[in-house]
Image 1 (cartoon, rainbow over the protein chains, first blue to last red):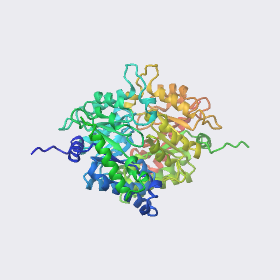
Image 2 (cartoon, chains in turn yellow, cyan):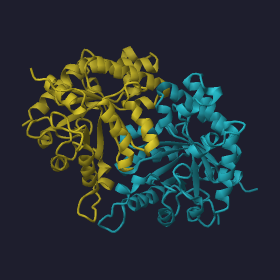
Image 3 (cartoon, chains in turn green, red):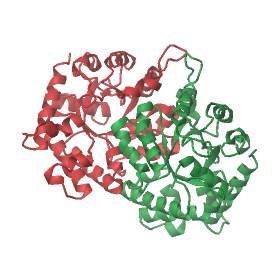
Image 4 (tube, one colour):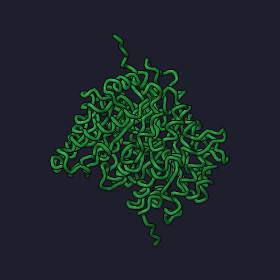
Length: 297
Length: 297
């Protein structure tokens, strides 16, 4: 019997990719105005609507996804009620054996970054997520508290390298005097931060966010980031083409995960005949999973 | 009678600088472990400790500061309780006529940035802060929802340009092929974003964060950012020298504000004879205010 340690984030995520035969991550971006159009959530309290809708999505999609990525902004927008909802949703994801990547894009100086790193603490305010997205603008010392969290709790990070939005290139593609672009310099830092943090599967716990909307960058940055798991947002509402993502996964097919959020959460809006938002989400997740599988090496 | 409109953030902040004869901002970074050592907060619930300590600081320092800058990470670290505390503290600052700059350093793609911009909404989860710190790594389209909030609610932004931490230079000082550094390219974007948003006092609602720990950059970036109010962190615990900040304020002395957080909040730890943490904070805020005043043109 081959046993792979699961106290390293990359090993845990890869075990989930293998177990589910999926590279799909379902993003949880609950837009209250849209959720209110579903009869069962039309008039319940905010926290109940967020929890009910989001756990419904998780339960419907769990068999098709290897992880979930809650977007913290959609919970913050509802203050304390939103935070209570997020905590409940994270606990539900955990009970479904789904690694949780909290999309928070935090980044700050040392003493403040330490406070943000509490999101990775099992005794922290959210009960401890598996991984966090982080912003690299403040430099390596701003990453230290997050890297310490990885070492202490087996957590993971996904550092913003090249984001999926149209304006990403304004700063991230600026050409440096040494010939690299800014995003390539960040990628080199990601490689350095992860070099001493490689799990049994050969992948680092320091991953990278690379927008699926930039397929040429996905292929190039894969070579600059040999040990990083890539988190690829931008499929669905943002228009990325899954067929062009093949290079991201590497020879073993385990080098990347693809996030879809609105495309799955609001699939029911385009399917008036669906039995429920859950059914529409499950069907769309299954289709995306298959579409990704067909691009794997 | 000269009446200056206060529906523009820069005009509002400058009115407060003039009214208080102060360029000092008190940062609210409540570290629960340290607060617990004050007898009155040793055993009260978390929310009460955060609110009690922070409002005590605001009341003690209000006469000496022109604004307050709560650091959201220290509230997030306590989940829903922390958010409830933050909301109460913001309301107290407003009742003391202190503009509130929420130090959140948010930055994300459009639909998500819109959710974060709700922090500026008077009907939002925090009751609407005056200004928000934001991270520029994602580019101009990630700023649009925040800029719309400025136009709609008279809010302000402080964009991270050069941060106060030792590692700031790793990314922010990278030399571009066109001769600029990354932080200078960001500064040029700040100028562009603010160009159509200048108030009656001649300052834009799009300000810039420049670490007081880099005095040569403070002087240089002042010239690159003609209309921006600079927010200068790094005084006190981080060791910046107020005497070197003179160029930041511009000829009229209204071009910058200086933040101090730990230096004021935990002044009592260095003054065992102080009557209370409030008295120690008030005295330290008064000293810092005077020290800044003596550097003004």
